[in-house]
Image (tube, rainbow over all chains, first blue to last red; front, side, top):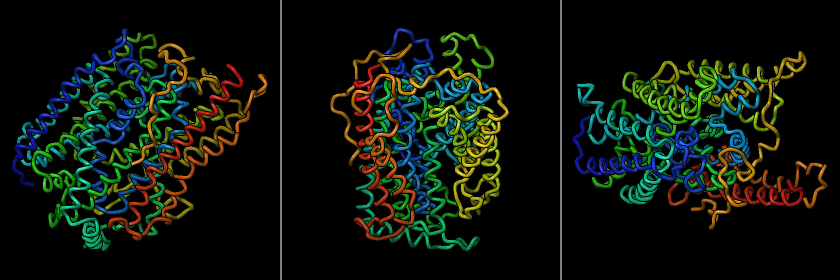
Length: 553
Length: 85
């Protein structure tokens, strides 16, 4: 697409980018502890964050730039089916309310930094914990790569870099600079950098959404007109497949897919390493619980954001362009609708929205590598200072890997892997969440269930064809015995649990060694004040004055 | 739920836990039953029912989770006060 450089928007974008760079480096000094060399400091922000910081951190972490671009893009592309992100982010919180406090407590007691640490401690099995760690790293890498896709979309629309230039270096230079800066402050400040930058990111996002959701419908003649235009656009049939482009409400055939996608994604969300990292950085059990009641505010924002997909259609973004890249629809809508300076603010929001999760994800993947591969397999006697150093270097390697991924491969590859990542990470649930509640499962049975779920999910995802792709064309497939289309990840999960249950029964009969459990029942409900190594001495109930309201709006 | 004798464990299922569980369960039932809201009308300022209904569940689900949090926390306090360490 031909686009002139939008000078004002670019200027505003650069201003915000520089501002967060300064914040990122200053974060190293924020709330610093005496022992800065411990992995708890660099990788978990000293396990000291209160309710509000955790809220910003998790919000900045889970609602990524890719989400901001992809959810409205999905609505733009197909209508109602893309809206599953909203029920998904609603039901995830009641779900995690049940198990995250237990994960926090047991990790606090035993100094676990990752969920794989917990699996190793609970089941006394390194092979199981390594399997979980590898799944986590594998699922996170393409996710980081997709954050770059988010930045690229914004840069494209601003007319910097992107697909116009012929020289690959000039084309990718802005992206290289952005990632170089990100890598530098993550290296020096650790988890504190994204925690501070998240404040800026969320403030910008909320302002942009509030303005967009009022101003754009006003300019487009109200929601009635927007939805009428959108229905007309969805009804147009694809000449190749003879199917309409989408629908404003889910048809009877699409409901299973809608519900299973919402459920499966809700289960997967807090198994991702970057979610666990943010959760464990909280200072108390109740910090986590309170967060499950205030995080839905972001879901509301996501719902409003999804509406922008309809607005992009009504505005005629990409109309008549063959093979228009839906990922560009929202940035393009901003540029069409807003005065240049505010478009710059909106682009900055998306750009910074990519930096925060990319930083946290790379830290989380680095922690997994250090704790569960380097320490468990290569150097068991590593000191905390060595762990921190390895983790810092690993965070750089992970980011460079993601960058190479995006620059050398087609974007669809990253998206395919992201789809697979969701299916994969869901397969860690029986060991992690199951383990939080019961020691009944046998470690080998869990490993077999995991392997089966991974294999089935990958195979089925590979088989899916879409009008544009021969493989990885979608995340839904026929559910065996039910005969409806449903989310592959969830089907694989059911298979996983089934195998784990059956094999546990068998292995118990043959009395296979079940491994040593280093945790006790009381660990799972431990409060910070009665705890071990890094417990922050909080007086009694950590009652934050003015307890947050349930996120009403 | 009042002072439990030291050597018997407090019951796993209590009224407040059941209520908390129901609060947490409600959003699942409402949102996974897609057929119950998959329609266009009634519209709200021009937005089809399908969309505004699901968004309306955001504050409702948050309030229910908050209620569950209060119930669970109150019970934990009672247990700690009653059974000691």
